Amino acid sequence: MARDPSKTEKPTPKKIRDAREEGQVARSMEVSSAVILMASLLFFYFGGQWFMRTSKLMLQNIFQNYMLIELGKEGFYRIVLFSLQQFLLLLGPLLVALAVVAVLANVLQVGFLFSAKPLMPKFSKINMIKGFGRIFSLRSLVDLFKSLFKISVLGYASFTVYRAHFAEFFGLLNQPVVDIMQFLALVSFQLLWRCGLVLIGLAIFDYLYQRWEWTQDLKMTKDEVKDEFKQMEGDPQLKARIRSLQMAAARQRMMHEVPRADVVITNPIHLAVALLYDKKKSLAPVVVAKGAGVIAENIKKVARQHQVPVVENKPLARLMFKLVKVNEMIPADIYQSVAEVLAYVYRLKGKKL
Image (cartoon, rainbow, N blue to C red):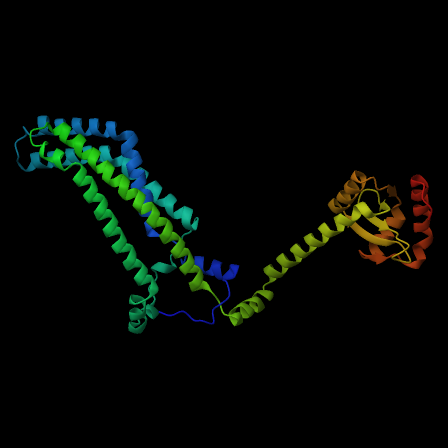
């Protein structure tokens, strides 16, 4: 089904969050299949000897002990129950490991996500026109290509392995059961290893395609982006978040100005005001930074790191903190008090006011 050509904008974070809540994520089943197959191969590669020994003992136990039981109703149940127990003991570790691997494969693709919404029935999906559109969509063509590719490549891999061991199959007729099992295990491992490599390549391609298609499906029109932004502007939490980010950015810019200051006037504990007097740029000293509490401590810390004098003057610090905003000149009625502080600082530095 053709996509709306007006949807040219990348999905916003809110659009992506909403899609995740709906269970709409970029996920490839090929990744899970490839990972599970490779995990199985690793299990048999490192635990193959244990698996063969356990299988041999299990079969010996079944044939030696339970084939002598009279095959009545009770005997039949005993044989079936014992066989199931043995198979669970044999395959239990593998099944548990594969279940964990399957979960991890999904977590690596989409993160920790649980949504029941995809399980809820949607009558809007019962639409014959849209159904035909999905049948003849790009996704259907890609799925068809993947299926044909898998059948072709896996068939060729099977043929090459079979051809390489063709003569050996006829030699199995007079071999012990254990040797036959070992030979079949070797051939199966070679076949599955080749198939696993093919599936890994296919999984990478499929995941990238699913990711691209997911992004395309979530694309928005310019009007949708504008409408979403307007809706979010009215969100109190978003406004608070924006204000918090703006204040953090302002504090960061303010801290960058402290090293340029001529003096930092303090309360001394609770308040700090940094002043800069540049005769060429302003008629009076300018407050380049101010803060209370932790911010005041940071201002004093930065000032000391850059050899900016820190002077204690409680009344002047409180007055400037209350009356003067950052990047504003001090009012005329405190010129005299500020001039005295600057004169003291300049004497220490050997400068003239």
